[in-house]
Length: 430
Image (tube, rainbow, N blue to C red):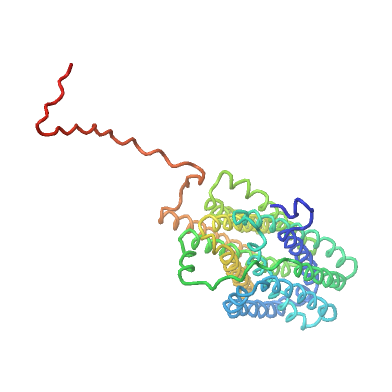
């Protein structure tokens, strides 16, 4: 997927989106590292739990209530999605600037809530804008894969210097850097071309076209995976803090997750040459379930690192497989809207999954949490395969470029007998 014009070597529309997304991910990495050393992890465990629980509940509300309203409104505007991306970046720049003076106060929590909502809105707008900046509809999966890879690399590029700044100075330096990076990202978002034309209003018939069993089952499986990502994120954050793990081990877990995401983005396109999308998506659930089961048995640091790596690989690989399946089975004229709709559902699933370990902090241990993760992922993977088999959708599909088999030859009919005119004798054979 090219990001530059072959004639002028200037950034094409997709290249501008890639650069804006990379800047946004660098800012997110700086913000995350800053919060890791702030009141979230320096407060007593019980107080942090209450604040984070409230913050996650408030995060779900905008997506559940505002999402169905703002989505169609943005569809009717040519520059609506680009504007939402820019607002998300400029808004997070302002939030990071305010955090600098409130890093050790309770005002940090509503600011973090606003930052998370803006980040999720940016992700939804990016998914909705992607089809408008990709000329070829068949290149959407490759474009999504490229954006995922850029996001992982940008997170590492932004996270390592931010962690060094926090270790040498304090989190305020990282927040100041995040403020500048988000401001640059917002400016870059304004340079992304607007959509060619506003999207038409969705009809009931179009909704029905996206309700095919393969898309519904795959979307549900991917939502479970994203929920498990949110579950693991907060389970590890609170359990590692409660067990008194050193700060460097938090860094090891984050690094394992980043490497896993990078590996998943790299290996999935290779697997797609040999395996169906359904097979990859099922493996992205079942393989992490097996790893989670062994992590529950281990219960130590090695298990935490292994499950962080496996979940990241599964989430990255599963998302690419889902995007490919949606491109394969979804109607072409609804593809952009479908990407945005499913991204909203996945963001909601992440928040819902994150609520569980925070609400059950007194009940879940590291072993029981990993075991619960293994049960959910394993059940989701097997249910996905079973549902497809029941609909006769599990099995090899013939390649699209394979010509249909030749039809059997039709039997030759005997030639018609000549009609003799009355009064005429048939010709005699000589």
